[in-house]
Length: 403
Image 1: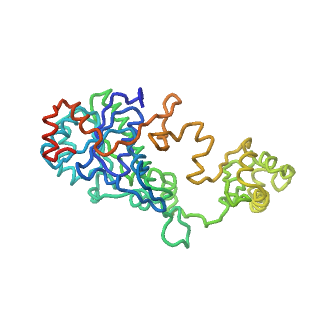
Image 2 (image 1 turned 90 degrees about the vertical axis):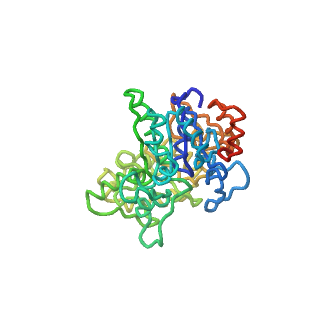
Image 3 (image 1 turned 120 degrees about the vertical axis):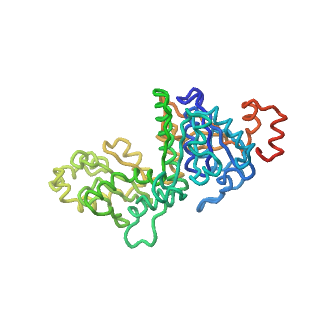
């Protein structure tokens, strides 16, 4: 994004898969120059991910790699070779941020841990994303969003109703990865601000586990306070035993809409008008918020019958003027045609694909990301920027240090 708030900031990304690279993607959206270091032969293993559940991608571009790598440049580098590591250190000298997903043992093996990188560039912000955090006996264990974010941090169990075998899985690929990556990008931005103000460059840590705990933080706090876990409601339940305007209703085309009006007394009359039952606003059973709560079961029965008479599209048009909060229950394809999503440019074009924009906008302007780089596509360009001549570049290629 030209002219973004991080314009002029250089980020060196030594990371794989979805989590930490998605942080790099956000930083690139915000204007940073992000150089992605990939294995000189194999590249980021995410490039080989062509099957995600029911989705199979044939050919390029591949959304699995594009989502978390838009707007970057790629260099193929073998950090296990001395020559490759020297190139990495030269990139480090020119960078403001070192961003990595490597575990402690791998960071030590490749001499890219905090002390190694700070010895090369003392002012660099060192940012690491992990599965389970930087401390504790499991700090050297890896993790994916399914394990650390979804299952271990409580969301899966909180969503899975009693009697359902197994657990409700994440709603899509890299779900926790993307959320955690945005957290990491925010932490890096704050660290850059501290460096600007004090000259001190902090070490930034974000984990999938920590992000999962934060995402469920309200529920976890309630659980700890009341000493009981959150329990998912049974499937098919309305949603609230004391509020007919907080729950799900099925439409005539077997779709759903969700009411979330926390003050039913305030919105009841307006809902009655919008469903062509204005007389219900005068019904003594529903005269006050307390009356509505006491007669929730009757109100739900009435609203279910009424809302089942029209399609979701018809209700969506009719409820455009509804005062209280509500939403159509949309699938991932329908989100793409949502007028409000489009009006705010929450989907943006990056090369041949439309991708979800990172959720932060500056000056009411959507980011304009470029496509993800092909593997090692900018290797020569980046090496030339470091001041290497073609003779040296060819020697590095011959030695297998770069792609």
